[in-house]
Image 1: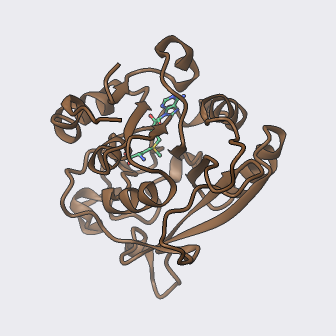
Image 2: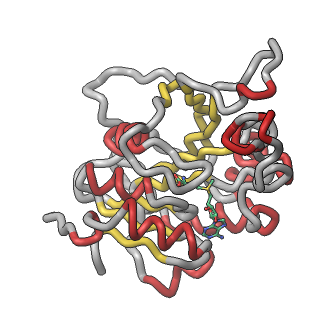
Length: 252
Ligand SMILES: C[S@@+](CC[C@H](N)C(=O)[O-])C[C@H]1O[C@@H](n2cnc3c(N)ncnc32)[C@H](O)[C@@H]1O
C-alpha cells in the first residue's frame, strides 16, 4: 500500500482496503443544510453579481449525497479506524470534525455512544466571509465550527509546551487549486496535523472531497488515506491536488 492514497468509494467500505489505523482522523462532514447551501454566498448568482441573475447553484445543495450521510455510521468508522488507546500518557489519538454549527451537538452526544467521551469545541475564524452578498447590514458569518473528539486520555499534543486557543485562524488558501465548494485550506490542515501527530503517523479523512487533507499530510510527511464517493471530485483531486504526492514514500 502507498503512503498516500485516495479511494473513490464510501468510507463504509473501508474494510476492503486494509488501511492502517489513524493517529488522527480529520473529517469535514456533509453539512446537511439542504437546498439553501449557497444562501448568502455570491455563487448563488452568475459571476457573483445579483444583477446577472441566478446561477445554476441557486437553490441547490452542496452535494446530492448530503441526505444519505449518517453520523452514527461515520462514528462507527472512526472508532474502528482510530488507533486504540495507548497505555502511556501523551500519545492518544483523536479526531477533528469540521461541521455545521448545529451538528456539533449531535456529534458530541452520539460520540459518547462510541467511547469518544470527551470533546473540545473549535471555532475557525476566517479573514473573509462567504455570506457577504445578502449582508444588508446584518452580522455575517466568518466562522466555521468543529469538534475535537477523544476517548479518555488527552491526545498527543506537539506544541512545545504552549497552549493553543480553541479559536483558530482560517486563512484563505490562495496556493491550492479550488475544486470543491467546501475545500479546507491546506495551511490550516498542516497546522492541525503537526499538533496532533508525529512524522510517519497515519491521518485518515473519510470525507476527503478535494483531497486537501491528504496533501497537507504528505507535506508534513505523514501517511494519509481518504475516501470520496463522488467520482468527479475524486478525479479532480487526483489530477489537480494529488498528482505528485501519491508517489512519495516516507521512511519509518
Ligand atoms: C464537506 S465535503 C469535504 C471537503 C473537503 N474537506 C475538502 O477540503 O475538499 C464532504 C465530502 O464527503 C463526501 N462524502 C459524503 N458521504 C460520503 C461517504 N459515505 N463516503 C465518502 N465520501 C463521502 C461528499 O461527496 C463530499 O465531497
